[in-house]
Structure formats: structure tokens, C-alpha cells
Image (cartoon, helix red, strand yellow):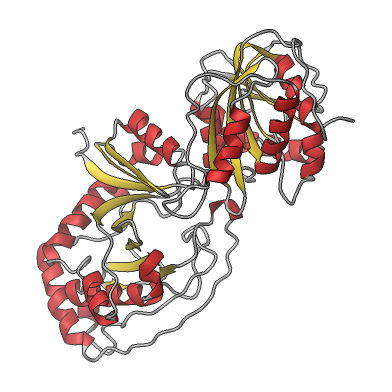
Length: 497
């Protein structure tokens, strides 16, 4: 089979996850021309669909059509709309070539019928004749979805779409839908069959341009332009092709989603817990090798263990939790994923694990926080949790923890009172979650203050600020440099546990 031709792609990512996506596309795909911006990673790679589908750290993957400078914002809405239309107004052959690339990537997975150049040009002429008599109707509807908070992104994306659409296909809490001019009403049925190639435009506007034009207006203008230019049929419910347009203060991007469902949707996870992309990122920091023993002492539904075992199957995994219901959910997930022989579960408290000292090579865990948990209690238990993790970890082993801002503050007080010394070396810190193109310096400062001190025999190596939707968190990596027991973890406000 011939090698895939290099293509240009971009992957959307949760805030703070961009460095993980960049590293993964380089390592997994041999990607070049990798460029990270807030929420997206652009790259070039000679990869087939199977390889692209294997990306674990990104949200959605697109074939990149255009990446241009931000459009100038003027007082003329009409002029701005005309400039926006120029993003998609190309000769029909341009779109024919794009469709060919898209279908070649999909191989036999593509749902479209044969689209010849003659057909595209013929559809253009037919469209121009019918558009003048087309009926036009616009309807706006707010759709409330069940997309988890951690996978939602900024509101404002408009799918030129019907009344109902799968929550897995859209990313935002607020969506508007429009119907483009219909075609062929009352016309020859044979002519209508020629209009078989369907499309939908999904648009998101943010920054200065969003103050002048809504995503709804832009999406409709682009959709009408494509109907007139190429003669395609607007199928807003189940299109052959979706065209994604994002306009902001950084760039103007046009792309085509390669898959209907986000990469973050794992078919092997029956009941979702922690966001799968964040779980994979945590496991990627743990330096898991063949034959290693890996522990999640607060495993919940087992998402971290599942992501790790799928990516590094030559290791052995253990999960512990005090909750019977969580363990039942984890067991169901493990069976669904076919990993029963890779992951062992036990009911135990993280404060007193029935496991031998220095028996694990890596410990990875999401310390519970948020509305679902009592953060104050978790913070008070933090010394016991860290001491037990330190005990079961081998010298030279790694610890990767997901901590909330509050737990970071508590941990900082813990290390200060313990008299920890600042650690040497590069922090490897990622920008903290914040507004697009900006970082939250105060949040990052708190994370770095924790990073700069050791916790007993655990020396900090890296911290990454990530967004879990409406909640910000920090992934901390530590390495055990000596036998446990040489330093106690205690501090004001953290005693009495």
C-alpha cells in the first residue's frame, strides 16, 4: 500500500492540553510544522486515517483548508461578510480537489457518491437557476445539551443545522440553527438526484469580530455562498461534509472534521469519569515501561487506568477506591474495554493501602475535588494521602497527581511548613487556563510555588495547568529520590487528621 501523502491538519484541545497534543503528533505521526495556539494545534503529517484516529490527547481533528490572518473589523457589516465569503468562494475545482483528498483519507468509509468535475460544474449551473426562486426561512433555537462541563468550549459556535443534533457532534452549550435555501422544490426528480452531495457549515466567532457579526449570520452567509458556488445541497441534519469556520483575533481558520465523533469519545469507556484526554496526558507523564507496576489509589471509575492500559499494555495496573459503587463502575468499564487481565481492583482507603512499601513504579491519581466532593476535607487528608503514596512508591518512581487550585494552595502551605527546599531544574510548566491567547498568571504563580518545593522524598519535576471546563486544575509530576520516612508532611490548617 502506498504511503499517505503529507496533509495539513489541526486538532482542537482543551486549554492547557496543547503541549500534550503537540508532543503526541510529533511522536505518533512524525508531524512537522507543528504550531500551537490557544485551543488548537496545527501540523503537517503523512498519516492515514487509522493513525490519525489513534490520537489520544486532542478533542476533534480537522483537515486544514485555510489558515489566514484575522479579518479586519470595519464598520461595514456588508463588506465584512463579503470578505468572509471569500474564505469559501473558490472555483468548483478547488472543492472537487478537497473532496477528493477527504475521500482518499477515508477510503471506503466515505459516505459520498461519485462526484465528478462535470457533476460539480453542472450542479453550479443548476443551483444558480434555482436559487432565485428558492424559499428562504430562518429559525433560531437554543438547544441545551448534555455535553460534560469539561468538554465544553467557548459559546458562540453556530451549526447551520436542524432542530436536533447529537450532543457529541457539537461542543457548545448554546447553539443556533438556520435553514439554508432549499433547492429543487417542484423540479424534475432526476435533477434533484444530481444534488446528492450535502454539506453543513459550523461557525464560531470570538473576539472583535463577534461584536459586529454573529456566528449565525456568518454561517448562513457562507452556506448560501457554497450553495450558489457549487450547487451542493444543504443537509443540516446528516450531511456528507461539514465545513468548520473559526474567526477570532488570532486567525481565520477553515477546516473539515475527519470524524463525526470527537477523538475524546472513547468507545471502550462505558461510563465516563475524568475527561479521557486529561487522563491520557497524566499517564503520558508517568514514564510507564514494560513490566512496570502502576497504581491509582483513588481510581473512581478507572479512567486513568483504562487510558494507561490501552496505550501501554505491557505494564500491570492496580486501582483502589473506598467506594463500592465506584469500583463497580470501574469493573464494568474494565470489562467493556477487555482489560480484565491487565487491571486489578481492590477496595481500600488511600490513607491505609494494603500494599507493600516501595512496590510500585508509578502512582497516578485524580485527587477528588469540586461540587461533587468536599474540597476542605480532601485538603485536610492531603498529608496522609501523600505519605501513603510516598510509602508504596519505589525509589526513582514517578507520581502524577491532578490537583485543584485549592488543593495546590493547601499543598503549598504543607511544603512551606515542612521546610522543603526549592527544586532545581526546568519546571516544564504550561500556560494556565485563561482567556484565549492569554494565561492566568496568578494561577500559574500558585502552581509554581508548589512546584518549587519537595514533598518529603518526592521531588517536583513538572506542573501543567489544564482546564476541566468550568474548573481549573494542575497536573503535578514528582519523582521519589530516597526512601520514605525522612521528612513528615504537616502544616497549619492541615493537622488533626
